[in-house]
Image 1: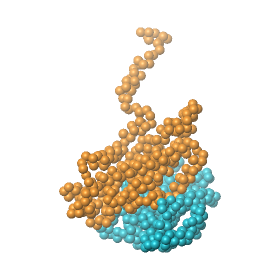
Image 2 (image 1 turned 30 degrees about the vertical axis):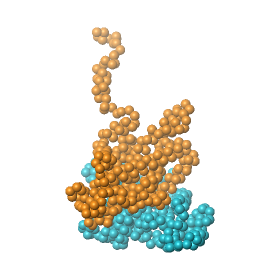
Image 3 (image 1 turned 180 degrees about the horizontal axis):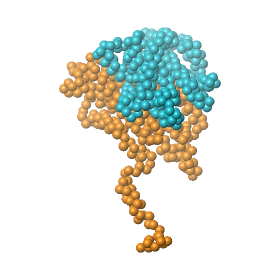
Image 4 (image 1 turned 180 degrees about the vertical axis):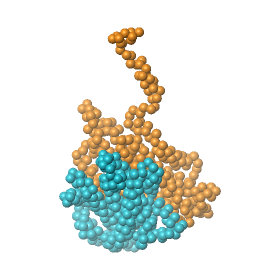
Length: 319
Length: 315
């Protein structure tokens, strides 16, 4: 071959060189090892590798299935009273977790209450996310007086501890599960608004936003097409933690007698009713509380993982 | 430093004014005439509608409810400055006196809980950070995560179940005396301790990775003085915020724990007032709470200035 003659080395065929082709073959063989493109797919990729997060997600999915599908599959009636069977301990035939003072089955009431707590909690987060997100987007994008008004309201919100703000709103709206849901939803607005505003401020001066503006994109288009995807990450994190807070707050307010009213099967209300039977029926106080802790703990663990997955550079605050 | 404190103090004025406006608005946002709520049971006995009407007009005039709203607000605000928050509709006593009667119990509980959460929170946070990724660290993190996720009313019930019902160590409910203080203080303190432990650990770990810690180690300082002398002081800045917020929250929001343990505190008074639609009392309690909370935040800001001179020169 010509290679034996010095001075006339042919240009190396890069694609055929053994090292390069090995690398190419490797890439073909192991495409899954490379991180996927796009920040959200990357986040999901990282989340799937987080064992704690997956366990939390599994527990939550299981609870959702039980709470929403079991009542459809079998006819259950958590309001069925039977005074003869009142305050039966757990393990009694037909009542795995016992019965309450009206002889209602505790397990069935827990399942029904799970549906109530999850639905109302999610709706409260939807209220705070949609209103707070919109306010934050507008305030961050336009700046000026809308921004200044927003910041003053956040200052005032800082003057009220969470539960107290909910109490104020319940005072105005009156008591009831929907009212408490709205109160907790409103209470979450400033948090979303502030976080969304912050990330809009960070991204609105990026080059690609400038580019969109220079080709004549309208403000609305820039906000919803170019900024919203950037803002989504922090908003998802806040929403996850917000769900835990919302479920806990709604249960607390129902416990105080301001939320769900009897005979609704709601976990906080069940605990409130259980207080009278603390000395005679421990199971009434133990199981609804365990249910709340399971849900809130899973959501919090998931929130920790979601935050880490969405932004691995920032060390988690609560960790 | 004096200038720094003064600036912060002035900055609280608009916040307090807006908060007071919001609190004032509550009474006027409520659907229906407050007089109806006020007369309530009393009006029940008055059979003659004309007599009832006369009573309403008389009370409206007495309370100045026919004046323009801004006049009513200014009058209420100046009253509040003189600690006159009006009369309770239902309890027929001055709002200020009703609140004052309940304050000692709430303050006692708040400080006991704060003591527990600061001592346990900071020490376990430091231990977890220094023994990072060991079983000790894991245990602290799990116990603290549970503390953040546990509804306080439930942990309160479980503690009553164990220590009052089963073991009969302490009375379950009521206020007054150390034995009645310990359970509610533990419940409230655990929540705060969990938060403070997690934050102390995170903050200390962050500071320990800084250059000046390496310098301190390089010059041969013992581990003890590196951690306590160099790292902790800077790591405490975010912790101080949370402690301040806790103080505000505890003074304001021991609503739930006070209800479970039937303590005669401000929080329980607030719930009673809401349930009985005693609006002036609700207003008074919320205003007081907002003021407490704002000043707790102010205290935090000022302590920042002491801990970190950069913050005070930056403003």
